[in-house]
Every structure is written in structure tokens, then in C-alpha cells.
Length: 162
Image (cartoon, rainbow, N blue to C red; front, side, top):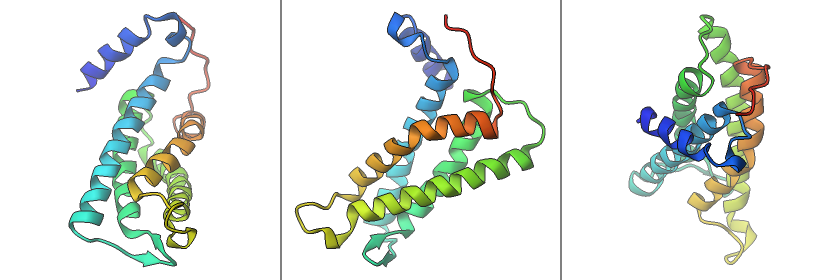
């Protein structure tokens, strides 16, 4: 599957407007995009099919936290091995940093999803949980790229524009 994504990135970067961003940004974006699909799928299975809920102060928490944590593990593995091609042997320290950032991001994500789905906002202004997850995740994507690149995988060199 990664080979297919590599070919897609290579094709997209043939267009001048798309060859200005670093290669690992596109890989990070693909990992994140597929992570969103996985996150939403797990969330929907847990929430709608298995009825895995905890509504605290009208916030949907349990299914979102579980799906986000599983997606975080997926993201770490692919970002380390494919997006940033990191060969660091100190996985414990690196994963700890990744996990701390993920916990902060997941907490922000859960709060944002809770606010966007709160029943107290009125029937016409509340968002469905799946849409709330998409919006919250999109808002955190850009900051996550830089945080993971600079803090976790410590890639500070500038990639030449091809």
C-alpha cells in the first residue's frame, strides 16, 4: 500500500505548485488522512454498533478516546518508518515524546469534539460526531506536522525544493 502512496506523491509532485512542499509533508498528510479514516471507522463501530459510550457533561468521550489512541499508535509506526524515515534506535524516548504530544493533541481533539457535539448548543447548531471529529482533526493537523517533525523525529534540515 505504501508503494501506491509513493507513486501518488511522485505523480502529484510533478505539478509545479505541489513540488514546493517537502516529501515528508505529503507522507505525513497521507498517514494522517488514512488515520482519520481509521479513527472514524473505529469510532463509528464503537459508538454506533457496539454502543460504547460515556456521556459526561453531554460530551461523547469513550469511543472517541479509544479510537484516537489506536490511531495514534498507527500514526507513530507509519510516521517513524515512512513519513520521516527515522532510524533512531532510542524508541522508548522517542515514543514517550510522541505519546506526550499525542495525549495533548488527543485531549484537545476530545474537548473540541465534545464542544462541537454538546447537546446544550441547541438542536440546529450541534454537529454529528463524525463531522465534529473531521473538523477537530483538520484543525490540529498542521501544528502536529511541525511538532512531530521538530520535537519527536528531530528533522530540522531543510529539504531542497525539486
